[in-house]
Length: 336
Image 1 (spheres, rainbow, N blue to C red):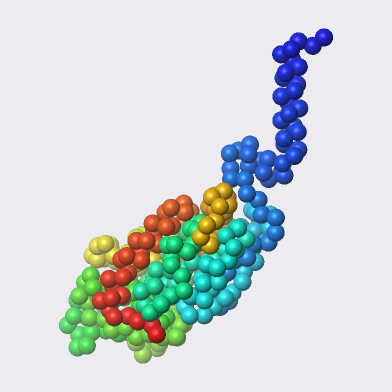
Image 2 (cartoon, rainbow, N blue to C red; image 1 turned 30 degrees about the vertical axis):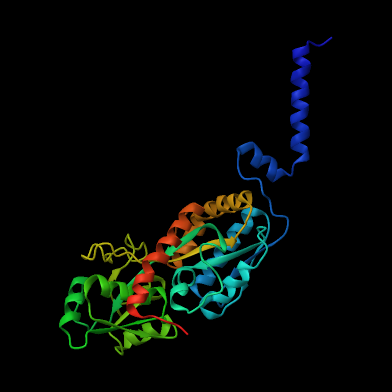
């Protein structure tokens, strides 16, 4: 007859085996490691509130591909453009909060649109569950080589003494580059006049051709022009130098303190998402952003991956909503 202690040990082993067999394999592994246990059982829809082909869309597709591999389900990009992203965000807001609809948040839509449009169909902080920031897209001020300035300090001082100052182009009214330019004016007293284009590509073409002296744009779009000498890089407005253009100083290094403006993309879900679903999605998103292959693909798009928490993303959105409000009001920026 077996000792009582031995029988108890065998019963414990058999019980553990039975529990493990009853759970799906991913859930069993998650339970064993203490990881979130939600496991999707069908494809996930990722709403991208812009047309295909742009950096925002392309970055969303990179994340969708890698995230789908980790979750064991396809993450399908669904482009819903219109009204500077407002239409897609409204669709996401009204979707079920079950983990099967996500949305790509863009700073221009999330923290600038609420101030420049008379009305937006969503509340940035109330209508969405933050999953995590994907990354920051570094912004860059470039000049036509004929402009007699090489540094940010020279540009600021020269603009003050030049008749009429200098014009700077951007991809359009109310975009992050536009806000960056207006904030630079407020902080330094530089005489700069905004010229909106219908896209960053045309603005860059005109600065290369000398039709406009300056353009504020994303590093990804200007990188080739800087490298071949067709434009001169003045400074980046990020907290750190861009890995794509490490020789270009930040505005802070150039003597403009407390001036950091990045464009960013993030992953969100409708408000009310169950905590265990949000936790699993954040865990897997961060794993994607720490994957060397995914990081490099994002870097080629000019996006520096920024793994983090949902709380950090919410804090960033709240901070940007607050600080851009004053800039937009002072500049009188409105979109009908």
